[in-house]
Amino acid sequence: MAMNFGNPRGRLRSRDTQVLIAATYDDGRTAYFRVPPSQADGGTATLMPLAQAAQRSGELPDGAITALKRVR
View 1 (cartoon, rainbow, N blue to C red):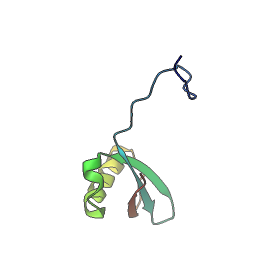
View 2: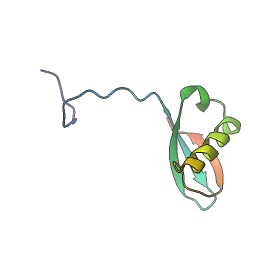
View 3: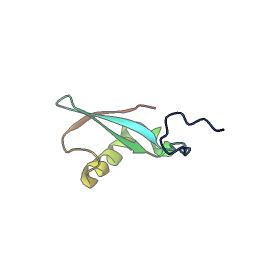
View 4: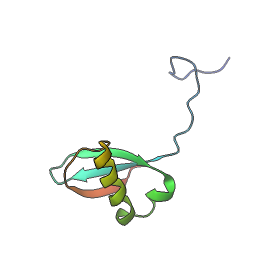
C-alpha cells in the first residue's frame, strides 16, 4: 500500500519546477511569485522586469519594489 503523507485524495503531487521569489516593498510588505529556474539566477536585473510583469498581471500587488530575493 502506498503512503499518503497527508494528501486527501491519495494522489502524488508533481514536483514544482518553478523558483519562489520574494519581493520586498518600500513599506515593508513582502509578496511572492514564481519564475522558471533559468530566469531566477540572473539577479535583480533579470528579476525586476519579471516582477513588474507580475504586477501588471495582478499576480503581485502594486507598489514600489525595493528588493528581490530567491527563496528556494
